[in-house]
Amino acid sequence: MKEHKPPTISGLQTRAITSHDNYYTCQIFTFLHQVLAPKVFSHQFVLKDSLSFIRMIDTLNTPFNDNLRFATYDVTALYPSIDLERGLKSLEWFLGAECNFNNELSDFILTLSRFVLTHCYISCPEISENIFHQVIGTAMGTSFAVVYAIIHMIRIETDIYKQFENSISLYTRFIDDGFCGWHGSEEEFDIFSEKFNRVDPSIKLIWTKLSKSAIFLDVLSEIHGKSIHYEVYSKPGNAYAYLPLGSYHVRSSFPAWIKAELLRALTRSSDPTRWAKRCQLFYSKLRDMGYGSQFLLAEFAKVTWNDRKSALSPKVLPVSTFDRSCVWSVPNAPGLSSLFKASSLNLAQLDPLIFPAQISKVTKSASNLSTILRK
Image (cartoon, rainbow, N blue to C red; front, side):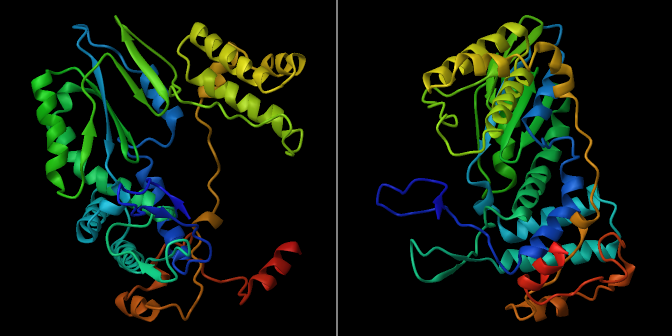
């Protein structure tokens, strides 16, 4: 078990995160994620990663009146705070407003969503021998929880954004962390930010004050005149716990992760000076850990400032049809029969990419499946 938050003053352990191996709603969670994720992560408010945020900052222009300022927010305990009925209402709204699914598929998604959200059981042997049933919010660690939480936030912020759109230069969010570029008045911003806490009584946002600088997704962004500069942000207590030289990892992994860290610094530095400063810090930390200078200089030379444009370019990945397959298993799981009774769906009416016309293999055990994969 991992605790997302430390124990309270009284010693109460809360917000446990457990591994999700062999949980019986796994296939349904995965199916819901694969169907909804393309719609969710293509939404204008939603960030897929910090690199997408950098691309937005690079295209952001400061107003002529030099009134642009930044503010960020954090949603307090988003996953376990979403009320079931309000969350499902948000999902129903999203299916109608942002998706082009037919009615049968939309109804099926809602039926499956209600099922998995009301059948979440968690085992934490470190706390108790009992099995816990989650009745508030959704479990962290499941794939569907991410898109479900994002959808609920989209429902909250859509109408508010439309009301204040003329004062917003940039608005985006990575799950429960938001960023806003604001060029309106401070009084208007106070009204804007407060509205987020009035839509859903169980969802609370903590905003920073408007400022010429902001820290978001480990990137420090600053406004200087008509330009926006940014660089990698490290907390004061950062231990820089890089992979030790004496680790038993295969030797080829060392150049790989060093290059990855150099590329991270490259894409998150707005100019060569800031990138060079980060490289110097990275080099000194590695030297302190015992890495040789000749090895490091050879690896550092493989990444230059001229590589930045290529590193920032979006990568187009092919869509795998297998990722959208629906797999049913554990036929005797509690509640599964009631799930089928709740859905009058005709699978033949659905997208063949999701439900193929024929099933090529049916196995009853993992050992049989592993045998097939080896062949």
